[in-house]
Image 1 (cartoon, rainbow, N blue to C red):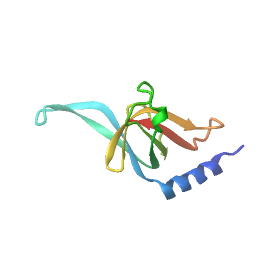
Image 2: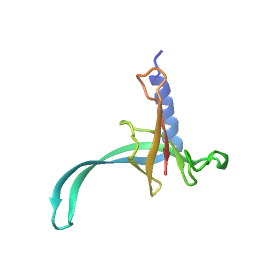
Image 3: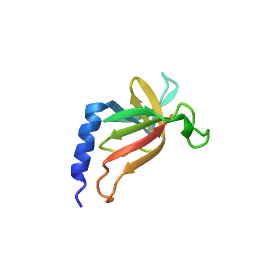
Image 4: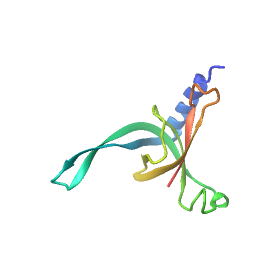
Length: 116
């Protein structure tokens, strides 16, 4: 079955109802900069669209879901990974879990991210 049409529908709806979001991924440590007293690293930035929501209070257990954790349903051209930073709505969120809806293993329709 070709799931690409479902990807296109999801992308259209998330674009319509969501907002811009960005994956910020730190690169390898580069050269030492004596002016800043730090090692420089390049960041990779990937733009996408997402819908931000909160977890229902009944799901917050202090172990797998903490108070203040958020859900982000999003579309990116690159797969988010644990530890990435997602910038959305003027805030930075650290990715703690990523699930991609990928029914046939060939086409990720969207990513469901837990972040804090």
